[in-house]
Length: 485
Image 1 (tube, rainbow, N blue to C red):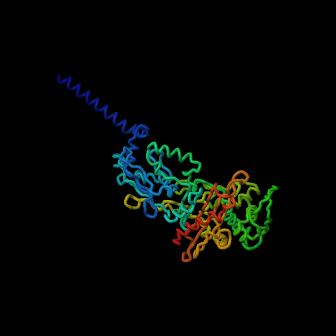
Image 2 (cartoon, one colour):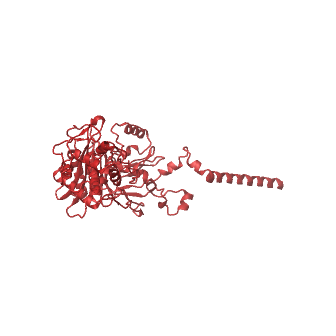
Image 3 (cartoon, rainbow, N blue to C red):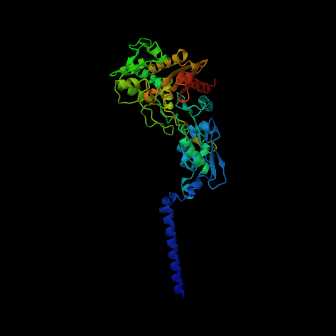
């Protein structure tokens, strides 16, 4: 009998060893396979068992979480959803994350290693830390002023602080409420379909993901190239610029909207936006120097992150002289995001130094303890300081007595450039209205804000849309908000 007991004991020990070996195989060798299996909902359930951290503007959260009492317990909320959608993006239980909700997901969801004081224990227990917060660089008043200014019209606004690259406003219109996509119900599926099929594209972030022909606002870049290359040495000297100007190698004649552009000085041509003068300037500068200057300002850069990606603005590097003429006035294949054109204005305002734009000031633990520092990066000199000073003078003239007087603010030095960009087959589309600008209070040592506005309103009358009439007043209100005027 004792022998049978020993056999049974040995057999049980063997079964126990096999059980332990199999458990080890499942938990160690095959753990990743089971974790990644779509049928395993444990990770998803754990993800929504606690509130996400918040995204902050001026110290106040623009996101939140609501306890639904369901298996996926917490859903994301957005108290001012349409206002901040181009910045926050959405955090959806069904469709994932976008923009800051995506790039900062580790901090917000509590999975970032920096939030785990005992990483080894956290790996064993698989416990999630409390989500941290993301502090943005946005100025609430500027964001609201931009959103009000667009008033539902199709377009975008970007504003930056020239001396640092901090993004102060990032607005797109029309917008949407990210809260509609937070859960996983049929209503969320319906909202997703509706938003994606809306011809107005409310989920398109026009400030950083849409490029437009910049039109005459690109003349800031062309003027910088001409000054740096020595093609222009005196802003008030008359140029050899016929009106109309025949594009080199073609029979096509380029004209201007107004009179008085024939042989106009660079100062007058800049203030009154003479296409003929700047098209010829671009040809005189040449492809190599025009490309070099455009790329110094950030065109053709595919690596811009703020921290989410920005669509590259483009300046064609393979053009003939006629195409170069059109490219130099912001037409042909020249395209830019509103953020890119705000960077151009900021570089002029900051003495020719371009500071990479960034949107996240810092991340913190729940409660405010610092987690990571600023997203600021070193700037680079994109034109000579003397060139930047002369461009600032030209831009100030546009607002004082040129096409940008609608952007003037009493007691503030404002520089700007209007643009009315043609597009469509045979330029039959409603022109895009552009305005780029910077502003400095009388008592400030340097400009405090640079802004770019684009309005693309298909309902507007073609004769009524212009950078000075449509976009400049919006830029003015954004600048006033930043300056506290």
